[in-house]
Image 1 (cartoon, helix red, strand yellow):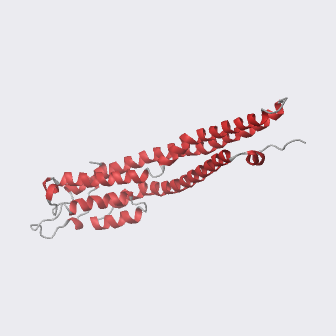
Image 2 (spheres, one colour; image 1 turned 120 degrees about the vertical axis):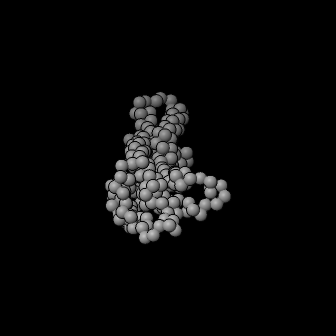
Image 3 (cartoon, one colour; image 1 turned 135 degrees about the vertical axis):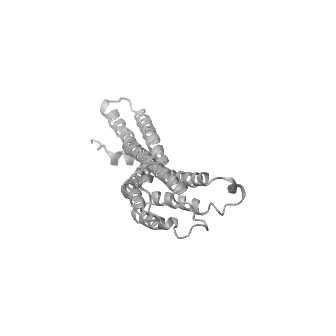
Length: 247
């Protein structure tokens, strides 16, 4: 009677190691695809914020309106958080005490914006380590399953007095399914990792330019008003258009 070969037969003939390897690849595939879908959906929102948030900020008439406008335009919080970090650094500059009291306004702004930039970078890189790990290890996990399956197939045939090709090719072909499964898990993870890494570089470049614009504006055009100022305040002064040209 001819044996029906295939995935079901391979699973039925497999041992604990084979089953554990297959389940591990399945879990890695589910985890990577869930992460890929979530990250690309977030990337669409980030791209929308890149197009709208800086323009919404600089088109506002004053700082309060600018912060409200960028909050509405940026649902991801990347650009809005950068703007609020600059505003917070400027507002807290006069109340600095201890070691922070000896720095200039420019240095205080640089520190606040840099910390926010690092936080944004960490947020953008969420999940990339997992994708890189899946892409680099899944093929070897599948290869291990193949080697283990071939080993047991040959052990099972070792007791036969005569070995023909059809009895060897079937079990070996089934074992090669694990290698294909490993590649099926790894290839989407690698492609997604490369795409997201490139997208993150573009977003970080835009955030860096926006941070330089904020530094230039807060350091020169949005200083805290002193008691000598009569009626003009920074919240009533229009945002200068030159700030969009970069620091």
